Length: 114
Length: 111
Image 1: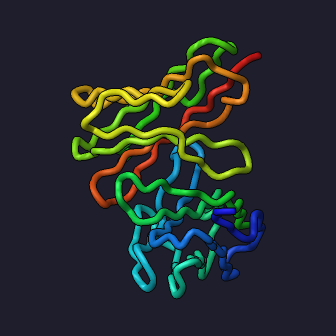
Image 2: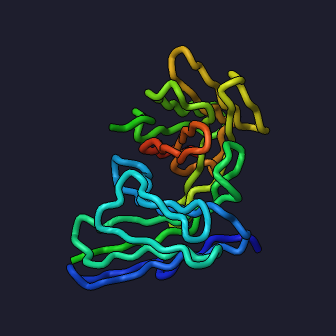
């Protein structure tokens, strides 16, 4: 089954404790991205990757890192999480970034930083 | 600054009636528009899209209308069904650039 998976689905952590949220897709997609969803703000892009070893900042990259060492994986790293990073996070992938390439989203990771 | 806006955070509609969800955008360079649907505890899923060269695209019960001069698009669902209850996001894109999402509208279809 074609899908985007994220782990963990739920995470409660404390300020400053490094964490990684994994994202994996099995569709051989070139393009992957991370979004955060906050009430009243919709989905905002954090980072994206056009292909292996090619990453770039989205709209709200501060406090986050990513890496794309393999085509299928695109982990999101919070080196020193803060309470304002409490949010619902979505990973997405698409074949490329052409207009007609549908983005497929993972199920989301709800992160709480205390 | 929000480039894609959904000014109605919520909408309630009776089953069988029409649901109309609205979206406004500010960037005249946007040339592709999409609607995503999101159920609780799931990621958004693609619903329907429209290119800027068209003013209407239809897929079953779902129709998207685009008014470029007003920078406005809308999603019509006819007839509405309880299973349509979800949060709907509109999104816009230009060229090979990233998607910009609206804030979402929560649709409730009342049986």
